[in-house]
Image (cartoon, rainbow, N blue to C red):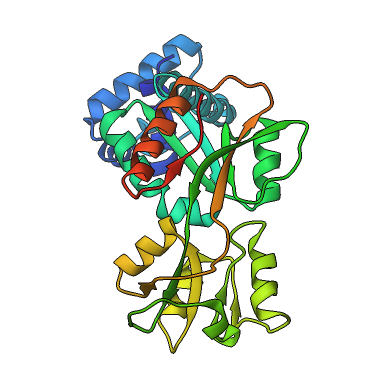
Length: 295
């Protein structure tokens, strides 16, 4: 049996007539009939009742029984085809917080697509607990987090360090200091483990105007009123580049954000992962980000 023969049989069943099935498959009626005749000869059974010339789907008893088998055969063929062709491309699966996937990975993926078209990227956004679980289970080859945790199944490795910048919806010049800021106008995002302690030191129990873990909400909130936020360089540059906020000099700001990469314990990085890290290093270096990882 061939895929074309099975496809011809199922097309006639679906369309009801050989003419409509031929139109669906962009072949002549004689070609379609020939494929069905060949299939019947190989199976040693009659699939259509010949008295109707299969102009209508006059299925025989054997034809009715064969529908399910044909559908399974076609699905298996497609799955095999996908597997055979997927093996020619190398899959790299990553899991990261939204700040990485929204502001760093788009340029990384663009350069990978330009230089290494044989690599297929699967980019997924997860919170820290999910990232550790997916990397530990092997579902994702690499993860990223600024909130490292202990795990016996996952190695947590410092990857890069970036400064935290003050961004605001209000244009202006001159240095800003936490003591001059009103927390009620803040758009709060827990960027790293030390950020809550810094915030507590300067603002005590005053609640920020917004708490969010969503990049779209952060950008939208900053575009209104006198909102302000603190964000790492990779995020601040992209937001201000869109004209949605302004960067101001900031004194006594929070500690730098250190992003860690997560790898399954003792796992050897794949070739495609090594290439991705090289490109990520290149992208971050252009923004003056300090790269920490040394293989």
